[in-house]
Image (cartoon, rainbow, N blue to C red; front, side):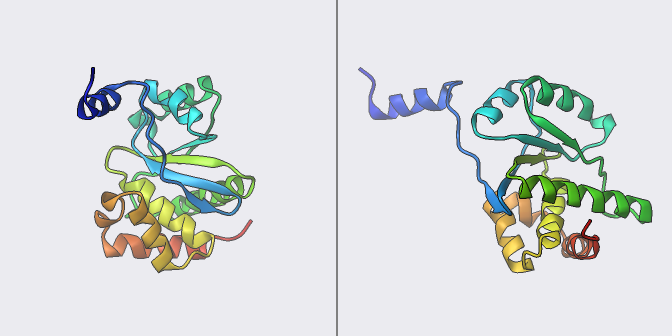
Length: 175
């Protein structure tokens, strides 16, 4: 007979254990931040209600592999090839504006989006913060939402990066 502690440990070690996702509701949909998914994650994400995977990575970071795994699991996929906020190229901002619009539109249509970059969650945290501003969520609420995804999502961002993301979201044209 297992003790309660042994039973709990067994459940924690089980591959069938599926922790919940910390969702943030925006428009009619929901969005969450997460780690870069590995092959075994896609079916689990789908079972947790995820409908879309948004990959904030470059092709050098194997974004096409994530696309293929997403599609194979029956998930929609959006690629946001964004490297770092210090980019001075106006073309980069135009692309980021388009990605904010696409994410907002998917959320308006009721999507449940799993937004990820690499293990640091740096870029996806900035994109989420920009998306909140694009959707007219006040800065203090957007920052609190970042904290709801874990301390690292917000605490590892510089004030200058948050300012950049907020401005990106505010100046992005509504399409």
